[in-house]
Figure (cartoon, rainbow, N blue to C red):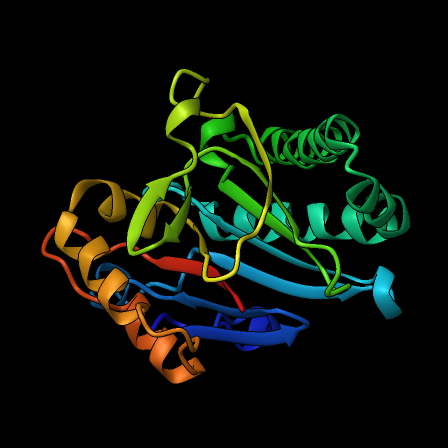
Length: 262
């Protein structure tokens, strides 16, 4: 366990965070888990996960934001939490407009709006890095966000983010890296994808600690495909176990959110 400061107990980071929700035709599972390397060194989890519902009735939106920083950077955990909270707050304040844009299929408006609020979040990180006397890459984190309409008649799913991380889709037993086409973009470039979910799809959003082995180690993606072949989504405990599948050489924190479409 990491050393605790008696004056800083509200800032303690739990080893694991687990979230779940179900609205209409989709089921959400999300987890953030401290990696084996951090446990070995007695360090806190650096990844951050936030799940929130904004608004009420059919116009409500569920937001998932997750972020992961470089484990070698001293401010990685703080940066991940700060950018997630900044982006989530901006999304919450813009919930009505975002919900209407999703309903009306205004993808370019969604892209530009989410890019602005994401850029604003990273601008705050750069300002904070300057205050701390750190280089920009010493106080930053890869971010991924997912917007899920509560309205069962709206099957549009909005994903966005920047930096390290990944977005994958499991369809008919096959995984597809939905960010593969964006590999030509700069590592910190803004990423955006709006898609219409099909029944049976599973969408997986994750930090670099899981995205890297998903891209590089076929046994991991094959095992998850087999575990998630059942039409019924896994329970919270089962999903947590799935995210912790061990692979030699991949011991970083893992944070993942997956959505099953009925």
